[in-house]
Image (cartoon, rainbow, N blue to C red):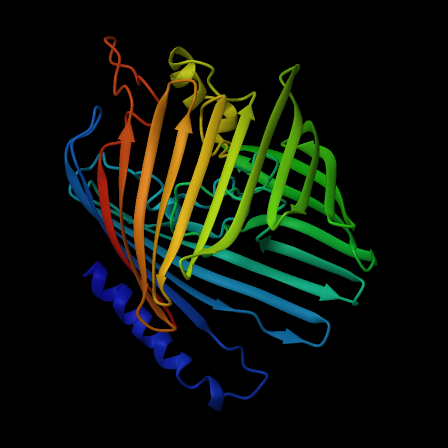
Length: 397
């Protein structure tokens, strides 16, 4: 019954999409996105073998009337699972957990059983006003201040899970944002965000300045993040056809000084007529676990529960390579390496563009490292991840 309801909604919106050209300009055009991911998981240190099916239906519209614009997006997230204890594995289904810290009551659970989780969420609901040099936006909106690509500790809003292969849409946050462009290559950005974690309402108020100087792009931001002092600096520079990136953030947390930073490089080039892309990043995180003995405490820490941590080791690396075998087919592989456990998560995958609107993807996650200790505790970050395979279809309509 649940699948039929989702399919009925999807088909009705698709029908609306087919008549875009016939609608008057003042009627908003609705677009959509549907993702279906069957998942198979082998037995792991803390879980039995299981299967799941994750579905995401998203409807979007962005009408503009002169200087006033609106951004609306509504999602339904459905997870069917054979094992009631099965959660998101290796980044798969991370979209279902997007929205941590939502302050506005624009989300909820439609139905929940031992083997079914059906939720919905308004992921965008904002109104903007632009005068050209100044733009103000109020409501639930996506905001990213990341400089690096996978490990982004200086992004204070809703960073992606670096192992999630489905990163089409960044989760919206509840905020007031004002941006100004005093110069051609300079932007000033101010954000006030309200967030709720465990029933506690917290305020974030940050200002950022970003400018370009020759081959360099430099950004600094500061203020209060979840009502704690935070300061950040980031830079990007193009060198010898590649891009070097770095970002760092200073946090004042419970009276302690904490430094989080990432440096990385990425480059595209051609080998034997094939387009190749490589990226490598290293992160040093003062919030992370310096040894396996600290891992459980880190997993239960306040920054982890707020979704501020993408990985949980103090020293981590992310490496990804992709090769275009054909204009419609590409293969890629991601490696996340916790240098403190040590443990590794490998994520090879292949993607196929079936059409301009439909794409297919398949992949595997392999967790290498100590699974559990003699005391029954996690032995490493990625060693507890069971071998997981998935197939997916994405449809934009």
